[in-house]
Amino acid sequence: MLDTDFFRRWMTTTAAAVDREASNLTDLDSAIGDADHGSNLQRGFTAVTAALGKEPPQTPGAVLICAGRQLISTVGGASGPLYGTLLRRTGKELGDAPAVTRDELARALGAGVAAVAQLGGAQAGDKTMLDALLPAAEALGTSFEAARDAARAGALATVPLRARKGRASYLGERSIGHQDPGATSSALLIDALAETGDAAGGAA
Ligand code: ADP
Ligand code: MG
Image 1: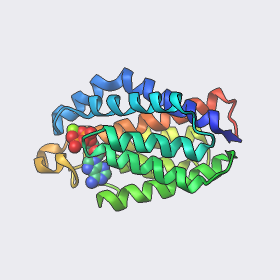
Image 2: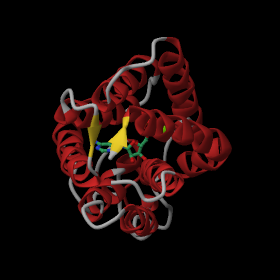
Image 3: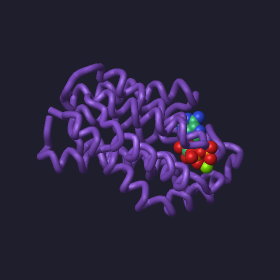
Image 4: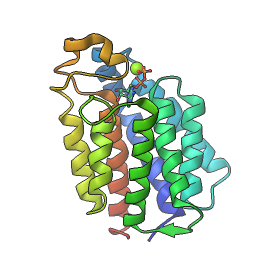
């Protein structure tokens, strides 16, 4: 079972990955956006880590709701409300359970991803974070590793796509040939989940 500590570690592992990859994320965003994706997420996940340390939430759902709230209130860019919605909605789906199975998380994450699609009006193939998140949520029903592989493959597959949503869509054809920053950071989030799963000995 995945307990509250598992979810706390997932968030802090993501924060560390975002710190490590911030300049890469910002470089990707400078090619097809406004060069702030790395700093946006760094600010957001620093706030997430601080909030989780200050008043540790007591259930898996509460950890994700707390993290989502921090992202919404601290990240200025489009990605803040989108990631915030992802985590809040996923957390709400988990309810009050003190621990959940990987399968339950997979279903909750599916609902979180659907909420992102609804908020941003994007779908698969639009060259957004959804191109990593949709296949990852689906594959999480199989294993953490399958989710990680699906997210990485989804992020890479954004390179030849033309952006149809968000700032990158203003570039039209010129968005082709670059990896989407949000899909790349989503792959980091799922990487961190798989890493947390590995550390827990393939829990669930
Ligand atoms: P901003 O575009 O406001 O500068 P960020 O740079 O932090 O925000 O985030 C950009 C990322 O947000 C994009 O790479 C894309 O993956 C994601 N994104 C933007 N708009 C949407 C949308 N409508 N639906 C889903 N994801 C989106
Ligand atoms: Mg940006």
